[in-house]
Length: 256
Image (cartoon, rainbow, N blue to C red; front, side):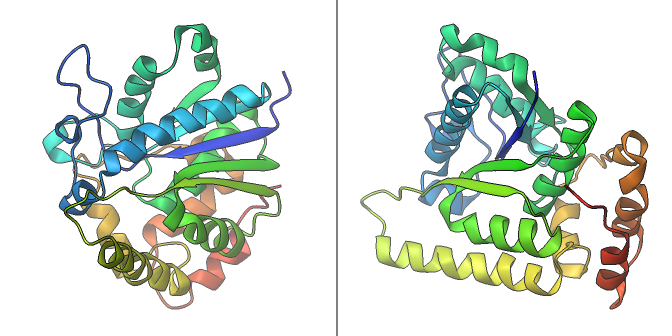
């Protein structure tokens, strides 16, 4: 089989089933922040899983990689990626069970940029080259962040990027206009504005968020599996300073 597409499923929480009948459809099955409860985000997570498997089924030469680390101390040392995989086993019809032969996990990412960067590294471990085509399944309001800020600006990826998005669905007791206005403002203030000036996520604000999402002090080994990215990844991890972005761009591998 000639793999020609990477499907990325970025995780946003950790699923913990309450019973053998749990299918991710109630908020108490998830470790959710308050804003995730307001928008019924857990229903979006279920939809993300289903849509990623639909995309996988449509292309027999694609692989799906589910990405997310051990981000919640209260959940214990279980990765977001594994919990999504576990839920997918319940959601995907038995007749499509062979799809799991093309499903892999990336269990170290702590933010959206690492969802992309580490997925390229993980794809290389599996396929021994970089993808020409990528499909991301996630929130529609994060489309710009992924497509323009991560793929185009930070990594200068020249392949084809598809984005399959959905929206949170706040309940009837919430002012929808105010909810979505705040959602877009938060995306700009807490993500886009920072990635615009810090595309590799190494400066104080974005780095602090990643550290909060790493309670078990996990670290990947992608430098070992792909020597071409070793220097690039090491510099991101250990250095800081105003000139770092230029330094990184000189050492960034070609992802083609």
